[in-house]
Amino acid sequence: MSLTLTVDGTRWRSHLETVADANPGIVPVAKGNGYGFTVGRLARKTQWLADRGHDVTALAVGTYGEIAEVATRWEGDIVVLTPWRPFIEPLDPALAKRVIHTVSRLVDLDELLTASPQARIVLERTTSMRRHGMEGRELWEAGEVLRRHPGARLEGVALHLPLQQGNHLGEVSRLLTDAIAADCGIDTVWVSHLTGAELTTLREQYGDFTIRPRIGTQLWLGDRGALHVTATVLDVHPVEKGDSFGYRARTAPKSGHLLVVSGGTAHGIGLEAPTGESSIKARAATLARGGLDAVGFVRSPYSIDGKQRLFAEPPHMQASMLFLPHGARVPAVGDMIDVRVRYTATAFDKIVIA
Image 1 (cartoon, rainbow, N blue to C red):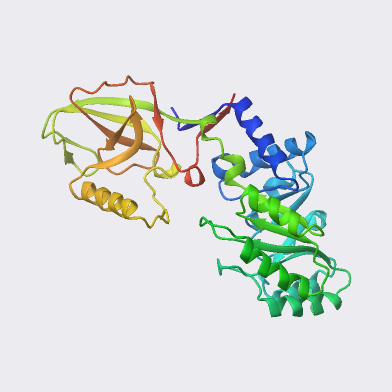
Image 2 (image 1 turned 60 degrees about the vertical axis):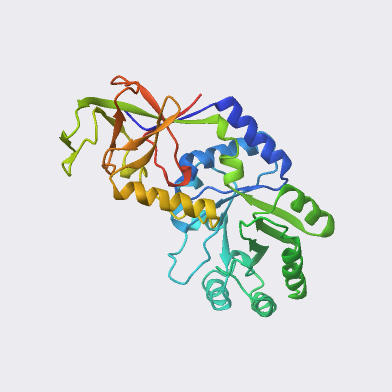
């Protein structure tokens, strides 16, 4: 009676090792809901990769609040991707030596090193993302700050690049020129969203630098064929045209069946985040969904016999109600049906790794 993620363990683990082999120095990313797997499980899998001999020495988390969940499951360094700010609570002294802070502002660098003179840090250089980071001049000034704090450990420079298609190497080259000019001992680049070919070229062009690719989606979700999401049919009710149902007393548009299935807003079902799609096709799909919603029909992520079925009404907290028209095969209570989800926004009741 649950929303279940079933994983072909052999296939998934093989994929993890393939990605780790192809990306020397890989930094697995475990943040948020752990790409559907939970952060703790991804920390254990990162340790598994290291124990298998792969070049994995650091794990990246999104926030300081996630450190505790991974620290007991992973033995190596922990990089926090969200930049340090003065309002961050001090670290547990037992963990401080394992944590690498991301610093994106000069004022924060000075304050962090004043409070923790032996802190480990990565300087974030702003990219075309324009989310966090220092400009080239600020990197140079950061070098001056670091020279006043000789106990600090500079672990390199971080570049968070956009997801857009196209070659990022030109931008990376310009940014690394600034890092080199800062003359503060940067010899490691922590980078996100470069292709395998771009990483290879980067290593060739900057042979004196250690390249540390931070990889999340490609690693954990790169082989979708190894993942299968299902929901349980909890109840089935025949309805005739005009019958009322649900919280809002809607009426059935025609005869058929109502299915109550596991999975609701508490799991992330029916909660839609912007996709970032800007194509005409994507905009047309958005308009089509809006039209369906206006007349009470919204396509759900649940499928029966390969066909996506409609929500009968908006999802409830832990269950959803679907409408099956007359003539469609009606599953029995206890049957499992397929669900298509956005893994980074879904909380599963059960995860089964075969």
